[in-house]
Length: 450
Ligand SMILES: Cc1cc2nc3c(=O)[nH]c(=O)nc-3n(C[C@H](O)[C@H](O)[C@H](O)COP(=O)(O)OP(=O)(O)OC[C@H]3O[C@@H](n4cnc5c(N)ncnc54)[C@H](O)[C@@H]3O)c2cc1C
Image 1 (spheres, helix red, strand yellow):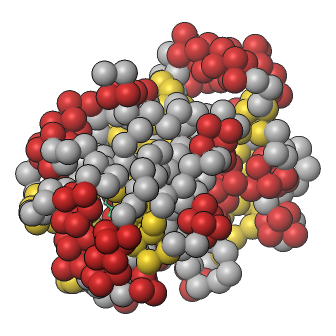
Image 2 (cartoon, protein in one colour):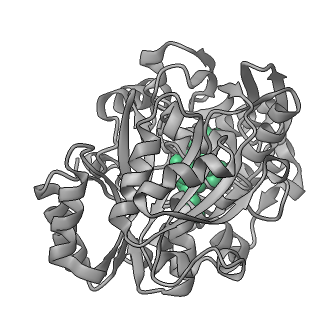
């Protein structure tokens, strides 16, 4: 669609000229997220761009922009820091990108909860919370860049999920204020868990999140450790011994098959990644002797550690190599790699890994994050895969499913093709809050085919 000059002038008068992006090169650049992690999505989404980016500086401006766009029936793609990793924030039909990253007010902070506007960067919340003895329950490895609203709308879990679970787990997200997409937008306050299902991981399809309240945890003196193992299997068994110990405070239990550790420049430089060894990356409160004693039965050796005094204060943290940052480092070293988001059966994980290895060999490199989901601990994979063709990738995913590995497909931008898709609550919320279907169109296969 082509935006009318009158409409653009209207938005300019709401947010001011410096908060509109109109230059085509900037629009192309700023419309992108990390869809290029997927060689399947890359050619499909490379040329997609918004016609205008609008950056309201307050909730009042946001509401006025939404009212104007709804009256003109202009598509709206909400955007935080654009770190989504499967194209969920790419404007498929032009229109506006509505950035919420300039809504940066911390509304209220107590040791129990942080109420923030959508654009507050997660690292800011973590820093402010630590100053009063609290910390985020969990955060994505994009801590330094991702916005709170973007995480709620586009993320799932991360560092801390080994203890606290995901965005869907009760008690983690306490409330939200959302803006509906109508000529007269409504500001709705939502705390009912059922209604919240239309907001969590909505990928910008149901409403615009203006403000959210995240539950916090008591801050811990986290020590960071790298432990090396002769095999991925023994590293994984060590990881299990930590993950399933309910009394053990833990924020990160990551397992990586060799040669993944060789992709981590800073850790290699610090001699933390012996050749050929699998690694565990850990955030624990145990001291060095306790970690060494727990690793010894599995043949593990500590190769690197960092004390609580350096936590979140140095240039990089161990978590910068975990979750989907592992994928980022791998792609920088070897552009032929891509990834899967897979979840193993806790009872069958060793068998599932063996079957997959027998069939695909070094085409697959194992990366496991331990994570709770709805109260149960899972070995969650962010496995790396050598990309050969879309057909080969699909065949591999089908094989994984055939042996009971649960796959979330990061190679489709159609959100209803992903098993994390929270079907009916999202469609219901979209109908109620976005009656003209203007939000982030083009990302639901079921609507495309109507
Ligand atoms: C290297 C890397 C590592 C990552 N690690 C993790 C991880 O550990 N865990 C994890 O869960 N994710 C991870 N991700 C995915 C992503 O970074 C996170 O989900 C992140 O929190 C998204 O925040 P954002 O501000 O960048 O949102 P964006 O990418 O800007 O938006 C994400 C989605 O939410 C929508 N949206 C954004 N803001 C709003 C709003 N205010 N209202 C309504 N909808 C909105 C967008 O339209 C889009 O669909 C990773 C991605 C990368 C590239």
